[in-house]
Length: 114
Image (cartoon, rainbow, N blue to C red; front, side, top):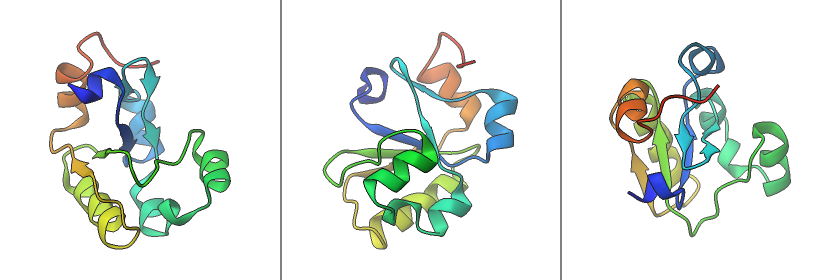
């Protein structure tokens, strides 16, 4: 429910080709940030707020807000969630274990972003 209302940060760790092929994940009226897993593993969440926004086109999640990671099947998003929690100190982390297609049907039943 909080995802539908856009009160959490959502990071899609699929690569950009996957996002182009199936569409971006929508969160309320906004598009989820795409931060491919390799960039998460390289330290994207450790970038300054300004560097993060410049590279990924949206605000870096604050340490106080809930962050949901999503990918195609839940494997890469689990890796990203572990990095966020154990390396960067984020506390309120969730791994959306469904696929992007599941997200489209459950979280955004009105279709995918263009």
